[in-house]
Image 1 (cartoon, rainbow, N blue to C red):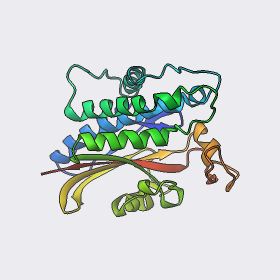
Image 2 (cartoon, rainbow, N blue to C red):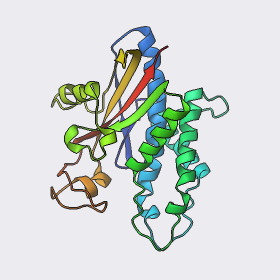
Image 3 (cartoon, one colour):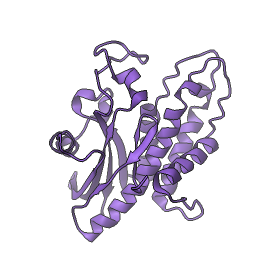
Length: 245
């Protein structure tokens, strides 16, 4: 892993270079965004890696407590960045992200540990949405993180891309010559407020294709319709917004 920033694709983290465009202020916020999105993806990777375990009907306690998942998240973060996160000196946002992970895991323990039930519906996307909601609430709307995707791949309407996200996805990320995994950021406004926006593409990995692959239109385990996606095809993006007073 050469870059400090990782991206979850199925169960793997891949390098994610940055597209520098903006002021020193933007560069500083890009570093913050880099760290937060890496933590976010590192947590989602834990749920992705444990899907078969979570859905095993023969097991009760899965050993995926909030503490266990946070510990594994920090391991994934270290692997992605070659740095150990100092948990004794966390920024407010870093602490909020890890607390959001804890809260989501605490709230889903009964579901995860339900013996006799196979598919639980506790998918990386579901977990990611819960973590994003918890994080945004804790940060009192000063920062927001969300999962989004090309419009044709959005299943949950809450994840629809806004105008800026849609434009980046369609005019940049979808270009054949766009560098795979390159994050984009710039300064702008959201709802009349000065904001820093950071977005990175995600691609379908092997574990994604059971729900999003072929044959197109077939029902997957969640009951949704498969999109007919191919391995390494652009499947989504993670968008982070930092508001300035």
